[in-house]
Length: 232
Image (cartoon, rainbow, N blue to C red; front, side, top):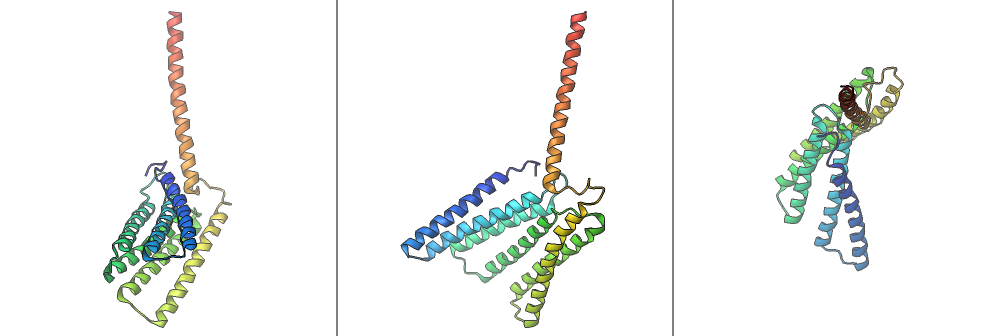
């Protein structure tokens, strides 16, 4: 991804358009009082596009100006794949159980990937970074556990309780990490604690400074040539 993402504006427009279209269709259908499978599919389609655009924006927000950006890129790919699978399944009316299980599993993993990407926005001091690492394992562990339940259709009261407890831990991690980010901001050395948006802004400013310095060097060279030509 380039520092200036080409996806941000299209995703914003898609989000706004999906929300407005959903609202408009909802009003029309309520006034008509006629709900059919076609109308439901249209509403679901706009909702899917709205959710996909939010997920895409979250991935774009968490990318950094340098590095591989594996999590944001993986989140974007999973968002695109699951969106296509859901739309195809809804409109073609796929009845395959394996198809919907695969789609649900990918959605679970995609949500976990985007969740971890969003948490990576919080830049933690070195003494707190183990919390993010541990949180990553817990979040993906929950996603894999949900995927296992879906694939093997496990129905156990003990397992559901464990899932509920696991979800509470994930929620707690999601709250603690931003708090630790705020605490890390008080550290004396904050150079490596810039959030992705801040880092991209700094990089953009550095690029503009470099361009200005290059332009100044060219102007100085031109001035020296003109002055030298005049004196000769």
